[in-house]
Image (cartoon, rainbow, N blue to C red; front, side, top):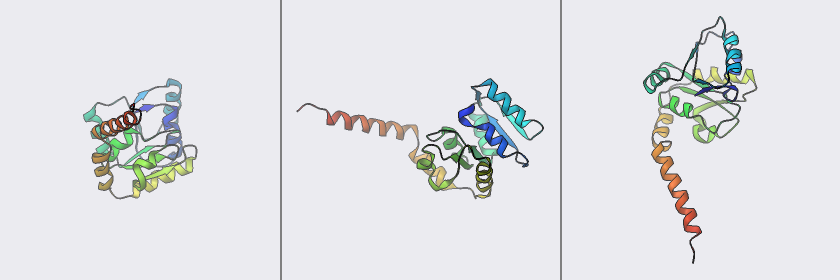
Length: 165
């Protein structure tokens, strides 16, 4: 992932102020000024900032997490959310975008500009039991191979419709 305004980590930190939730934010810093605001908000709290993680470290981080929250300002579905769902993380996603088409009822949703809603979504997600149904759906439906097959089918349909008579 990336640490930047669009991903909305600052609002997540603000929403969880006063809780005892340990928070890990990982990813490439795309906006140094925004990152400094996040660090200031995280001061004297249980917040750990990590750089972009290799595959094994990322898998370990997901496996150790209970909740993965991505209250982005806009998002189709975060690949990080799909990855986290494979490791039984309970998910929080934004209402701004198409995440609900992928995650359906297997995630909590929040408006990215509503701190109380973000906080409640994280709380609700943390209370959910593990969801093997989501991980199974991700493994079968949202793979690179499935995406390639759907892309190929779309190209073939377009080409079939424009063939000369």
